[in-house]
Amino acid sequence: MDRAQKCLLAGFLGCLILSVAGPFLKEQKVARLGTGAHIVLTIDHSSSMNENFAGRYLGGAAPETKSAAARRLLVEFIQRRQPDLFAVVAFSTAPRQILPLTADKPALIAAVRAIGQRGHGITNIAPGLSMALETLRAHPLTGARVILLVSDGGARIDQDVQERLRQEFQDLAVRLYWLYLRTPTSVSVLHPPARALTETTAPEIFLHRYFQTLGVPYRVFEAENPESLAAAIATVEALENQPLVYFETLPRRDLSQYGFALALALGLPLLALTVLEVDRWLA
Image (tube, helix red, strand yellow):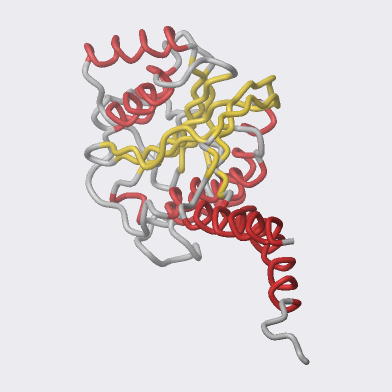
């Protein structure tokens, strides 16, 4: 019994020391197979996105701005698309990457909401598309690649930038969907007016025509209210359901709880032996 007590005490102290040290298993990458795509949400955050669909700033007939409606519907889109990998890029005068490709839905939802309520600057689409393409380039091709451009207008793109973007779209085999948030005063890219228009007066039409020359699958959706925007997102969701291989990163596992449990299992019989000890024999 004395030897057993010493062994229990040594094991008890050893488990406590190891548990306090905080042992853990490293994070692991696990391959998953599903249906979906690698989607980069490229969201316009210029000052014009502060308008509502009626063309008024922060008020008017619509209850929310174009930016707020887009963020709300994109969050719902992310929640429905379980196997997809998403990235978030915002752009106005300059682009910024909010989140790289990931399957972490809470992080993606937080990233979309973090873009902010009020936009600022001008609509500069080319740098936003470049950053979205670089985001896809950094990830291996294991499924369909999609850039979902959410913007309420177009912008002039220099000729050399046009050629570079066209080449990158083809090299990376990226599909492009443009959710064009159109107000009543904006020109329609699907039904342009018959009169001659210049790139200065109607950049959206020229941007649409440029997208048609990319040599990759492209489609534009005109959304004139939150309902038509939701319908456009649902159409994109139905189009992009291909086999997809992706890797899910499992967080590291804390093992200290198992050490404390083992210490408890060793401590109980040790406590029982201590209680049963007789300090003095009665006469």
